[in-house]
Amino acid sequence: MTTTPRSPAYPSSPLPSASPPSPAPSSSALSSASPARWPLLDRIEGPADLRALPHHGLGQLAAEIRDFLVTKVCATGGHLGVNLGVVELTLALHRVFDSPRDVLLFDTGHQTYVHKLLTGRQTGFDRLRRAGGLSGYPARTESAHDWIESSHASTALSYADGLAKALGLRGETGRRVVAVIGDGALTGGLAWEGLNNLAASAHAGPVIIVLNDNGRSYAPTVGGLARHLDRLRGHGPDAGVADPAPTAGTLFEHLGLTYLGPVDGHDTRAVEAALRHARSLNGPVLVHCVTAKGKGYAPAEADEADRMHGIGILDPVTGRPPAAARGKESWTSVFAAEITALAARHPDLVAVTAAMLRPVGLHRLAEAFPGRVFDCGIAEQHALCSAAGLAMAGLHPVVCLYATFLNRAFDQLLMDVALHRLPVTLVLDRAGVTGPDGASHHGMWDTALLSAVPGIRLAAPRDPATLRELLREAVEYADGPTALRFPKATAGPGIRALGAMDGIDVLRRSPHRPLDVLLVSAGVMATPCLEAAAALERDGHGVTVVDPRWTHPVPDALPGLVARHRLAVTVEDALADGGIGSALRTACAERHITTPVRALGLPLTFITHGERPELLARAGLDAQGITRTVTQSLTPRSTP
Image (cartoon, rainbow, N blue to C red; front, side):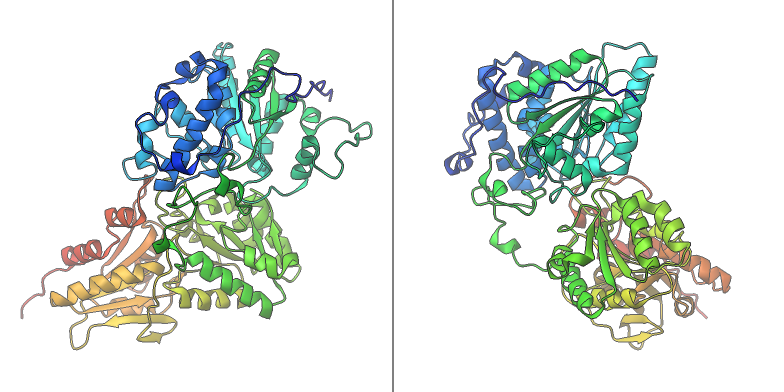
């Protein structure tokens, strides 16, 4: 294939002088609340206002945007570091292109806070990621400038391919499609599928790919692509050494794209010049912009772990959480300690993750056993299939993902792991309702998907002690895949069982009362079930609360327990359809057990963003909701 000639790079020196550098917000600025604190930003109601701003004002505007973001995001939580890194880049995009006529797509849409500010949504940041407030990702319901509700990485290039083809077929040749993608997201397989098609499609209109290269996703970007970009930036071990023919040129040029760069992504003039050049070429172009995550905010720049990628509520001056929020044990931290301890006892244990080493708690294991932890980049499909290979060779891989990203690797779990009955353990962090990140990040689909996989066993721990127990059992299980799921939350206190029956923990049993209702709690739903049981007992009902620990397949003894009660209610923070309630109903029907089984879970809909307790209560998964369901379902006793 004939490669596109390489265009000259855009170093800062031969271009017009850059805008003044954006200073970090000062402590005094951060403590101020003057109405005139952001005078230029307050004048930007849309991209047209930005385009009317003279170049000499862009440095001040960039500084105001960074100050605004630090102030607002530290108050609400959200994605801070990545947005601080794309300020000048986003300014240039909206000055060169005419959104929404020109289509701007942001891969892994947590980098769109600046885009939201420039498209008239400043006032929404006071309720960022809260119920009824501004989404932390692009949202089509918020603005015509948001084309896709993107938050799962590596999708924008495929969207761009389809949109460009459609615009071409409709004869709208004057419109541009621009896809902004990070180097971390470019490690995903879907990104390469899109790139492969964009480079060769004869039917697509011109697409401009803006590579936001900050050298990291959560952590530094891994793999051969990372090394290639490092050489292009001039930092790699082979920097300055020409590639021997016939492989000279960039990887992107060999695919058939015109490559422009590297460009200083914090030099608005340089980025604008590169984008205008790209726009004039009327073909597939990649503009390589080098940025720094956390730019302009000292606590983020000093945070080598993830440059404050995603934060909770922080003191904006120090960058530290409030004292009351420190030291609380999370589910992730419990898992991190236990997997490290298990690895010391099990030399065959290895771990795999998809660009989530620290967020899923594997950093401690990587420090203790660096050769036994594999970060695949944003490549969940590869992670599962690679784990299958590890298991085939006699190891026990533990694959750690956010629950929502399991969706992307379902085929590999089904056909590459389960079909071969391989001992692979999935650890699904952020399961159930995650809260502020919204519909695309709730880990609510995992149970329904896993229930369709033959031979898999699924566990849901209720407290730190059962997480440790269940993880040990999973790692020692050799007859097929296993999975554990737990939420993004504080782990909370231990909940001791009164006893056990065939592997099922009995958490509460009303003494000296008829057995009216059986509450089957899955994992962390044990706490609201116990609270509901206490309320129901006060109303005169006899209640049993059990925790099956392993929720799929249905434990053999559970239908028999159901038969001893007037009503059974299952409670889980996953889809009600396809969870333990559905499976228990089927198991009872097969045994001709007539006790009604009510399944409480999340509705089959896309749940918006909000605080986790609020969203669970809305779904009836708090103590009041469980009590209400039981009360409404119990029929009056017939009198003799």
